[in-house]
Length: 170
Image 1 (cartoon, rainbow, N blue to C red):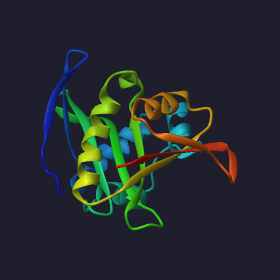
Image 2: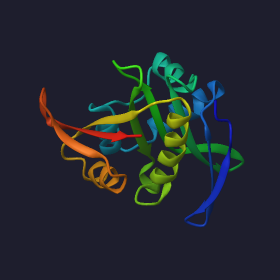
Image 3: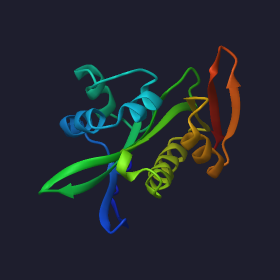
Image 4: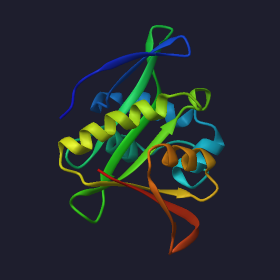
């Protein structure tokens, strides 16, 4: 599993990008809790207040071949604070994974999502994953732009006209 840590300067702040760890559960829960209602809606398709303990555990326990997540963090008052995450999870095909990217509201419209996705793509290729896809709400303009920048194909979800499926062959 990829264990490399990268540090980059974004908006005059040092940002660390690294694989998520099982010990990150409090940080991951806080990250989701602090997202705006709109960002939570686009990520979870519902009015979620916070993650359940089971979801936090599932999101923080990754193995590389089947599940993977990279977090972006900054130091704030001496503690590590999550500002973004990009992950993949199993799908119905062995060489395909569903992916998601979520960026804290104040860090949206920076290069953070691209940097996280770059890390995720390296991991996916390392484990022989041939395709990533994301199911998103059709009115999610930020995801539409992100998908276009990465050359992802887009098609309406045949089972839900309010959703778009973005896919990227690796």
